[in-house]
Length: 432
RNA sequence: GCGGCUAUAGUUCAGUGGCAGAACGCCGGUCUGUGGCACCGGAUGUCGUGGGUUCGACCCCCACUAGCCGCCCCA
Image (cartoon, rainbow, N blue to C red; front, top):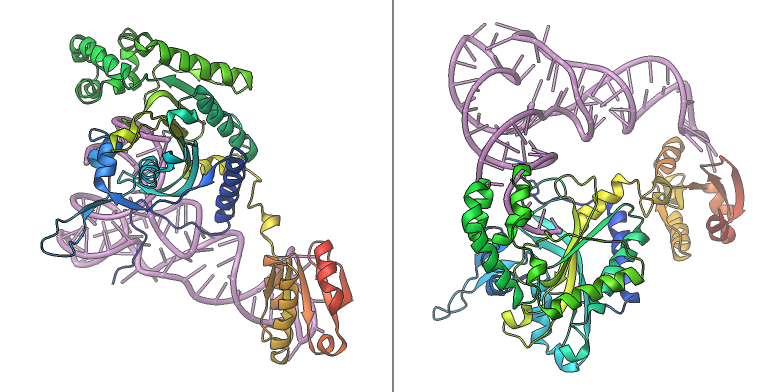
């Protein structure tokens, strides 16, 4: 019988690492709340069509990286439904926005999510098949201001605040405008045209991209081709007046609140739904997976999946990568050895003391202390060894202590041992 | 999906075609109501899985699986 293991690309998160995850999530919740976001939880699987139409049939995600299966029909007459484990969460949020007619409130919807996503890719450091994203979306009717460049700037400023609050140092914000739903196709067409002559001289990947996804050519890292790629038509020249003004307003607002950025005219994102502003926060030390988070505006997504006009902008943070970044930086956000220790280890001495020791532990726990209870059959030496590993202090609870109501407490750090009344124990432990 | 590297004790890693090793950790003792330090002793294990070559394979060969690194792509 072979050992059953976590499947390829999935893993268990164990303490104390989960402390760091909790700290990151708590920080995100705290920051997002201050910016007026509320939490949304969408299903982990959806109708396959949602992603096909929302994310784009031609994207790699939809074409080859989704976990898709045929659901069992309830009746012979019923057609089997195709279901997919969500590869990202924006499409699900927009689906919920449409389904619950959130636009009819007339208000801007600010929603954040935290949860697992699934893509069937080759695993690597910081890239898993079940991975975790923390994301947020601002979406609503135009009358609610959902198209305003202020929304873009606000989101970017919030992300900068989030990373700063987590203690992530040395991040880089790159952004670009890929144009409106009208000018993007015009640009792609021009690019495609220019590429008919140039493409055959480029790398094999770009020859393929020129046909399947011309924008991707801009992303090529082959050194010899950079000059030719730079000579291709520029997105900026195809932006209409509105898009140009929108982008300028975003940059102006970022300048106003002092968020550092660099415009990267060749920043292209992989999902079809992006329009106008796209962005990426990167961080060194992540290897090939240097993108920490990414996002952009998606003014046409709602309509693409059958909803009302509802412009929006959002982002997704790769939590797995954020954890790696913080670990590499020796972050003290959570999980330092000191903080992982319990407040006290209660050591009963002798089996007769066991149940009374549980009562003592209960008193301390109810007082808010973190307590582990030992075993009365342990030799005292062993109680000290275990206690020293997992707690800041130890309380001895033997026959004498049970009778007198005076317990012996020892602080592992100072080595100081004192006798205190059982009734005062919690108060004393809380102070030290 | 493609290419390269790797897989040995709980962990980090040595190792040789002929008895499976170290360090740390773990368990026990010196020490039956006192940990950390020290000393003494002990167990670590299907050498990733399955085949093959060989008198004999942890070692050589093949396949598979998984991890890491890069590519594709992406958070």
